[in-house]
Length: 458
View 1 (cartoon, rainbow, N blue to C red):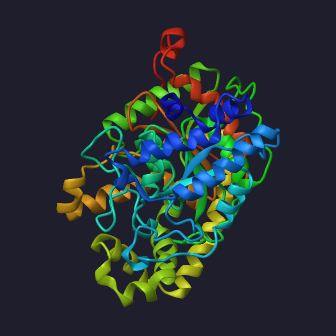
View 2: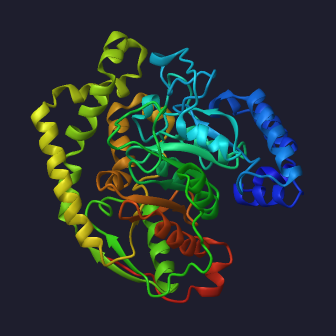
């Protein structure tokens, strides 16, 4: 049964369908692993044992009768602690919400439950989701699978580490500026950022409603595709026959490749080389609209976030980590006209961007320009914290600003992901492209295919 802890949701679902895996035994295996793990309290904020076992028993009976609700009926997963869960504390990583117990599930959790997915529990996160680092001295900072002294990425930090440390086969997180993709990349996982509005955020503790999205963190692209279908209420994307032959990729140079550090750049260069060897063409592009859009981050993000949380924050600011508090308060200086003007201009920039990438199958860029920073230094060096937090989110935020769908895939360089972006609403095409890229990083790929010199860009 311990081998189940290494399997993804798709394989577990197939095992249940074949009668080789019982949902109750599977859920008990995960609960035992969670409860006995030395890092449990840094990953899970709450374990929903009774709920999980009740849901597993129902799934087991459905499987016995041949009445499974979906390909993932009976598969247990974790949920970030900003999804409301009936009768279970949901605090969004903040002392400001301590003791908050919702009466109903978030709509997306309710929908997933209706498809037979089992809720293992809630996972730790950055405070109110307003950091890409995953550092949270208020509640807990989850571990990074590749560096015990580093942060795991955020804000869906526990969602990623629950998977990386074999305490869930998948985790559901949210992504406002990179919060699914950063922890996925830094823990060598797949992270899917969906299109704004595609999956309901009803019952999800908000950060910036205009940018908030929901997405899975998984071991494989197939797992991400299946979970996306469960969360979206759509048919699973058919990944069969996915190929890169004849595909065109735009390699974004503007902002995305500036100052990328050695390891992430090495991972990225190897990634795009393999994409090219697999039959795709690459074109390095400049996009001035991206630079302008990035300059709008402060009026767009901080104004909305502070507007959302101002009254609660200012009633008890001493309960917050000072770096997060300062980031929220930066929104206080943004005027209404500035906010409206920024949105008007962003809509124009999105049109320019979509026209620029219309003839490409996807845009490719490093998921993050840095490796996971050191926890101790982040806590003692304010300038370092600010610099690393902004860099962590820099590349992923491009997708959020442009309203794109995006996915990060692990490369063969630890904690270095490669990201694909497509026009918003095009998740199906994105997942098929990701399925074609994914095998390029398997262990046996280099020996069979890599004979060409690495591609170099400007």
